[in-house]
Image (cartoon, rainbow, N blue to C red):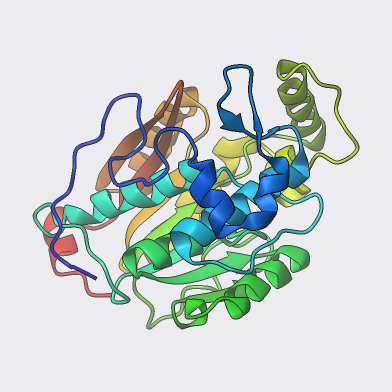
Length: 315
């Protein structure tokens, strides 16, 4: 793996330049990597190959094919009712995080197991550790409070060659994000998180129904492709409350993590979060936008270290 690769600039309206999932899915190569996908592939009205994205089994199988083709993951599944991640968008977060780290090394993004990353709420899919370790060789600790997700993520790590050398999944205490996870001797280059963004179970269910309505479908009994358990979808006070707790806890580990980061689903949440960060004593705050077709995503990054201190940070 080469360590000196120049950072590319993002392209408006497109996935990150290093993201291999730009453009239409190459179903021929995906079916070759995962033959069971063939049963779900059919031509659309224009004659292009596609799958029925309202079919949970089709979406799960597509993910299996993508992970096999691009990340050498041969054993992967998620329990019924748990979130099925859209891999192109998840990969974008990882690639932009690599760009964030490149600021410490004159635009060269770092690779190898010397880079240590903490994934808060890794989920049953273990998706961020998979993409980050397979793409950049980073070393991950994934945390999880849900016992089913914990078991699923561990099974994925243990079932795929070489993954257990770079990824470790540990139980996270409820009502705690960093305490009990980051030990006195630990140093992390990054923390990342895909937080629950609904404020209640009712709001989460309403959002799920809207997705199905937009697709012109009734909500089916099996909703796995738009699924998710309570801890994945909602938190009292919603996204701002969750990230605020993360910010407050992060201040106690200010010297042990170079960059704390979290996805932010709604643009209107950025300003109040920046105000919370300023009050917390963060000395660097970044908002990184991710253009994904018609959708704009973003994550917020903060550090209690100056740029000069980051240059000498050693994880």
